[in-house]
Image 1 (cartoon, rainbow, N blue to C red):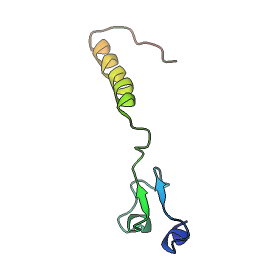
Image 2: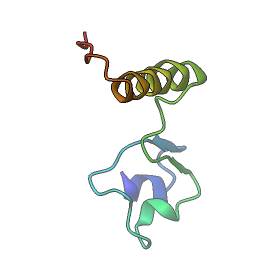
Image 3: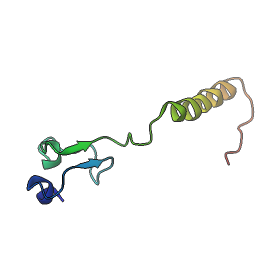
Image 4: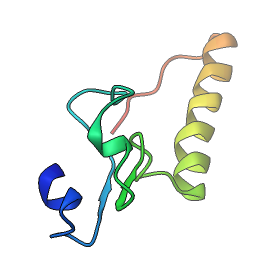
Length: 73
């Protein structure tokens, strides 16, 4: 894929996960102008933050108050 991107056989690639994270500083995917690389952020939306992190904060607050842990679905 790197070779195909470098030779412009692909117009571009959006990549959100890698075998090695973070990608090493000299990795070719960091230098190709037709690559958009993100560190596992493809799932991030305002709703995900609100739902996931809001629940996490509620769980921590409940734990600090001694409430029993809830069972996750």
